[in-house]
Length: 391
Image 1: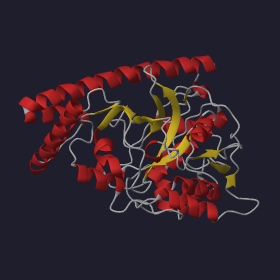
Image 2: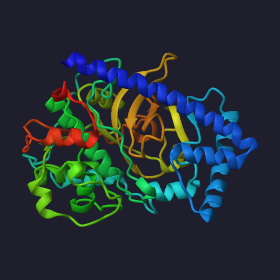
Image 3: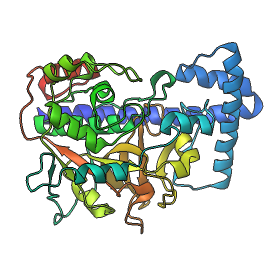
């Protein structure tokens, strides 16, 4: 039974790789076309990504598209042999400033400070939320990929329909809880509600930011999260449905483990056992994050901006040329990066890791059954996923 699931997942992985290659070829074709016929290139790009505009907006988007095409061409010309690529991805109709405001807001929250505050508020001998780091003396394997093990739910998009809701912390925290549930149940991929976090989590600030640690604290307090199918994402703050919040909770977690700060080895040790939440600094490298399409992101590890973006680390490995990486799940849709994922450099001199990836990881742990026996069924219906129960 387990073998059948893994074969199915391997087939999905091969199909995804083929799709990524086709998308990369499309990006290259459109970039070449943009140099001779900008409008035709833009219209072809818009059809590929399902974009529609009013006549007035189309002119503005075409201008941003052409500026981004010039940036991509310059990157290719100036960085031959670079470990990562830029391309005309699904965000290429936004200016850099528009992308920054949409994805990070005016004043991004400092997630490291938020984690410190959450931990300090619960520092008794018998913590309600936190347990000690257990893997400090373990030897991590050469490579890990939880997507290949079938333990990761599909990539989501926090900015559907151009929303400016700055709730990456909710998507990161929920993704970590979904993964903890998958590990506990042996592969049930239940997609859970980020909207519940945006509307009801009083530790955080809805569309104005927060911390994945506080998402987990809220989940423990509330006795679980509701499936996304029963509380779908609205990409804005709405009303907290208190009855639904508690009565329809389907997936629980039991505690949180914070890793040692600024320790890449600890992140590898954790990933050998579980997908792990991370936070990174994007502001210093917003141009590259904006148009990233694949490869190992290898900008400087130094962060002058706060740790401002929350994600989920799902593994690590080494390319055939020896370059080491962490594999990261983002929440900007499958039209960004490598089908919604990115790779960042692993094994650098700075203990914080590339873009701060090792600065403040943590993960959720589940050790008890869910309160609703239909959780897996609802999750499969919402995510369209096949799990062990379907085989």
